[in-house]
Length: 465
Image 1: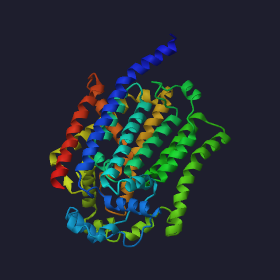
Image 2: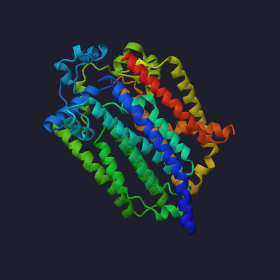
Image 3: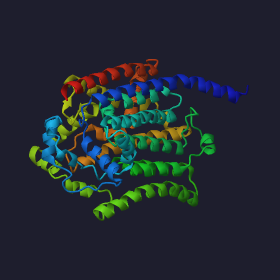
Image 4: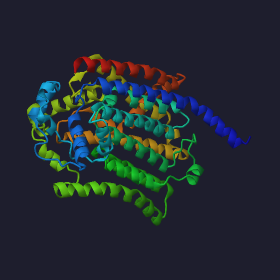
């Protein structure tokens, strides 16, 4: 047996337990997600009626719907939410809740056949979203394993956080286009890491590895285009892909013709899919409303605006309330933000978050030489890409709240892979500082804690919605 064969067999034998553990995480996620999908009462996921009616219109007419005046009725929405969507308030007016009709269509195109095959079953469509969520978990694992193949516990810990964060599971198990958007964000991020020279088959990325392996940029362009065709929150990928192209160019210093060729491979597919949607919106809503957001802002009369909120309560109160509500709803605030967890859970989550931030600083400090060394440039660039993804997700929620009051932690989920990773390395940072052994045992603690957290959240949903 050759040395290469022995090395390949040794790598395979090490990976089998890791993959089995990942399979267990995915199975646990699916069980929890099915419980969320079944036990959450109909329409008790934010914006779910509007997403449902988008699919219904598309399935019944074969046409992408147009957002129109009257698709948002603030008074009626507040009425049915207050009544917890009791059958007595579900009138014909309910079918006119269509304020998501400006959304890009890819998720709804995938759901339309399920709507037709199941006679519009909400549960069936929720379960399809949950399956997409399982793919998000797998991609989160793959992203981190690609960066740190010699530390698979980082990838497993990230997968657990993504898979079992209660509010995240509740959203993935609802009828929302977030599941597909997050999947495409994760896949595009993974493609960018490979493009930068990170390969999970090699514990340490080296110059030879980069020179002999090349990831075709056309895949990045295709994934980016599909993301642009799915949800506006996925547009943060433009910054991630652009940064990846810059980092690769700075490192490899290609010829001008090579740079143009790779840029075209990324740009043409992305502009193709994005351009189809932009031209559609300009035709429907007029120039320059290529995203349909101008029409959306015109339609949602009565939705609380940030300017009015500041005038009523003052800037300091708005910031305080915004941070608190966003933090709470990142971990768990279910239904239409009406079901909160006990206060002590949020306190524990805050302590964990602070420790994670400090621990991430410790981890970066203790491993700065490995991250800054030239031999690990692809890995260093990958960590930078993760950090930028998390920052862009924060920037998105801030930007959205400049116009409307939307203190909802779920808007951070486009960057959840990055956020989850830094929570895990924060724990590893403390373990390394305290000179404790077996950082990989952290995942054995995380898993049962998150499962209990999810089961308790489902219990609250069942008894308060």
